[in-house]
Image (cartoon, rainbow, N blue to C red):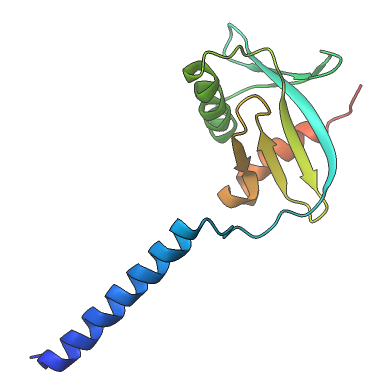
Length: 140
C-alpha cells in the first residue's frame, strides 16, 4: 500500500511538471539548440525515374550528380515528406531542396518553398550518411 500523502506529492509533482512544460511551450521561447553556421549549401533536385531509381541533380546546373539505386528507404521517406508538403500547398516540384552542411558536421535538408526542414542527424548517423554520400560524390 502506498500512503495517501506519497500519492498526493507525486500527483503534485506531475501537475507542476505539466504546467511548467505548458508555460514554456506557450511562451514562444526557442527550445532548440541553435544551429551551427552553414559551411556550404548544396541545391539538389530529385527525380523519380521509371525504373524506380532516383536521379539526383545539381539544383543550379541541372547536371546529374548520381543515381540512387535500390531501396534507399530513409532517403525516399525524407523526400516524400517534403514533396507531400509541396503538393498540399499546390507548389511545383521544380525548385531544388537545399542540403546545408554545418560547421559541426551536421546536415539539414531544407525546402525553401515551404520552410520545412529535416535535421538529418536526428535520425542517426547511418540515415544522415545517405544524404552525406550525395554531396561527397564528385561535383561537376
